[in-house]
Every structure is written in structure tokens, then in C-alpha cells.
Length: 87
Image 1 (tube, rainbow, N blue to C red):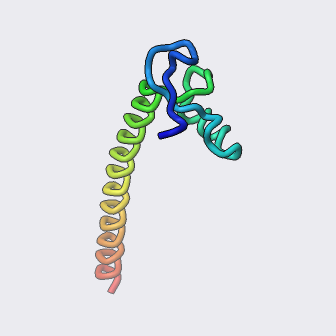
Image 2 (image 1 turned 180 degrees about the vertical axis):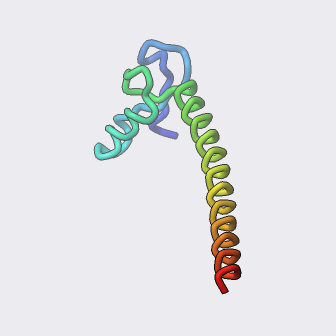
């Protein structure tokens, strides 16, 4: 990747990606989402932290979908039971 550079050029020791190498309209989003230390580079530890948060979010969303489905089924069953009792 041509926009990757070593952080030794920026003063650290790990590989990183310069946020400035992305289109300007992405800079605020990338800085907020990935650049935890505010140095203008996304290094491997920041990328790993973002990946772990993404994994946790996917897990939480899966659990919420299952809960929503269970609630929908229970609601439909209650409506059916109340309709049967009313009839």
C-alpha cells in the first residue's frame, strides 16, 4: 500500500496509515473513529482497538435482534390468545 509508512518517520516504531492520504471528506470521520492519540496516523494498536469494538458491536446487535424476534413472537402469541378468548 503506497500510503502506508512507518511511524519511525513520525516518531514511533509501528506501521501506520496517514489519515491525510485519504480523501479530505473522510478525515473527520477517520480521526474520530480510529485516531485515538490524535497524531494524524492510524497505527496497528488503534486499528486493533477499532476491530475489537466492531466485533463487540456485532455480537451485541445479534443479541438484540434475537431479543426483538422473541418479543415479536411473544406479542403475536398474546394477540392470538386474546383474540381466541374474546371469540
